[in-house]
Length: 180
Ligand SMILES: [Fe+2]
Ligand SMILES: [Fe+2]
Image (cartoon, rainbow, N blue to C red):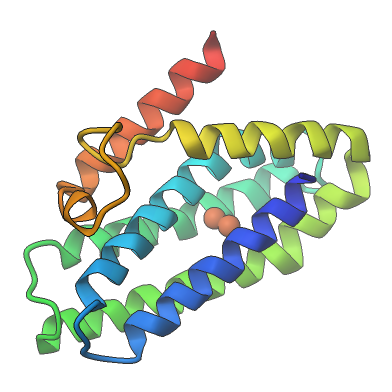
């Protein structure tokens, strides 16, 4: 799939998961939040590995654009870390979730309005398709579960682990795979 199409598809999925969790208490809220967290980590780590280098190299004002997006992602990552150990549905959790929701929506909108059009304007379509395949691979490689072979069951998503470790593991695996 072409890179920007793949990125937009992810954004839609992430927005929809946010909506489901934002809808409030329900039997599957925790599972959905874990799912959201996992999608978010996979998506942002793969973007970091595949999209940002392309932006820096080819996009108009690429260094600045890539830098701004990385800052937004670090901010979302910091909020995710803050949410850890906070009871879902508590006032603090709700506040942090709202902050995360707003930050991620703004970030995705910036990618869609500033970064992706610049890539489409300067990168050859064949290259964007090749990068789309690499992006899908990077997402798959990011092991967000402690046991990558465990089926995608609710029990498995609960084992996601501390978010900092999950993100580090995902980054390492993607970097290692891309360097071989
Ligand atoms: Fe992003
Ligand atoms: Fe994105």
